[in-house]
Length: 270
Image 1 (cartoon, one colour):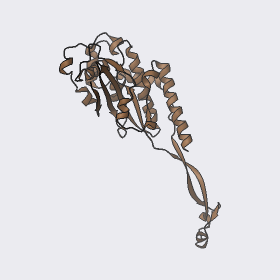
Image 2 (cartoon, helix red, strand yellow):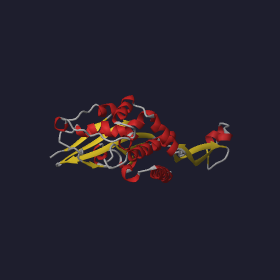
Image 3 (cartoon, one colour):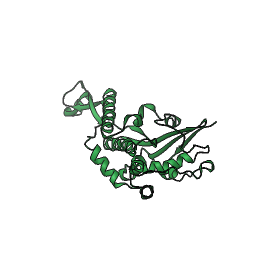
Image 4 (cartoon, helix red, strand yellow):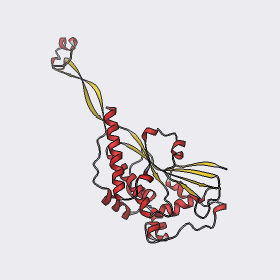
């Protein structure tokens, strides 16, 4: 009986995994566009090797565009000096600084800086259409784009859990660190291209030391355990994508809801 936690700090590290001895020789790939999000497994592998998916970027911008960047602000009390105000500084008067002799305390709006983590699903079930994963990943990536423009530092982490025969593996994958620049063209492959999940991702599940069966075990979607193991501040983590997003409408609703929550949080903090 095992309960494993595996954390990967880059897509390259994750993609380098190979099936373990007990999971060798199984074919986890089938189907066409509904399965891979492209015509075939060979095309999916080619896109993964190239690391770019222009069609996915274009689709994301076309379907999920139009969100305005919120200006994240914190309002603090600051002191200003002028020729009138709440308190007089006699020393400034005596030195002839009459235009800045009065002190006033007022609230001034400043741009806030905040670190956030957005968790997205690395996997989808076999019965789910490829579009399910596209919308989840694209929603997370578009939200990151909007928040980055607003001055947030965003970390993107993919998560997945697999259980079979009393053994469980919890995976987390950092595709973007907080300080890293946002490269939408590079990130969309690991986040929203179903062919990545159903080639690289399936191999990652098969790399577990325990047998995962021909169906790759039972999935744990929106598994909170990988994030808990990383000791992330829970108030800074945005998750729940798998259960919330399935199509264009739900993706747009989810993005709008996250922006509204963040805006409310900023107002309360002020």
